[in-house]
Picture 1 (cartoon, one colour):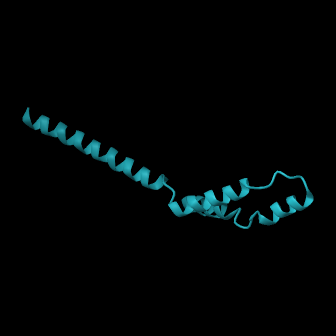
Picture 2: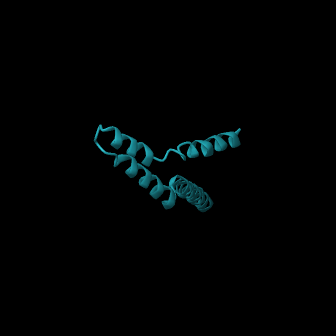
Picture 3: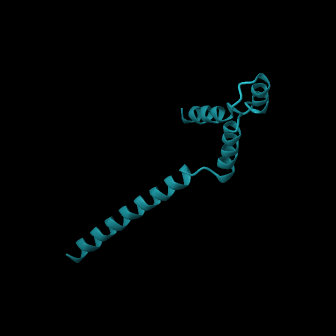
Amino acid sequence: MELFDKKNSLIIFTGAMVVTIGFIAMSLVQKPSPAQSTAFDREIKQIETQSDSSELDAIEKDLMETDLEDLDKELESIESELEADY
């Protein structure tokens, strides 16, 4: 009977460790790095600060200040990750 109790305890302990390690791994993978999130927040804030004016000069100024150069930067990394999986 004592062997049975030790075996059950070992199985329960191993299961708990697997679940804990899995949870920690998932938390580390899902967190964006602070540098990425601050750059993203900065870009969103810049887009949200466009003027409410319908004057042509204000619209042109907003267009010139909006940086669309890196718009597809994240798409390229997503595509490379998808291709690496196959």
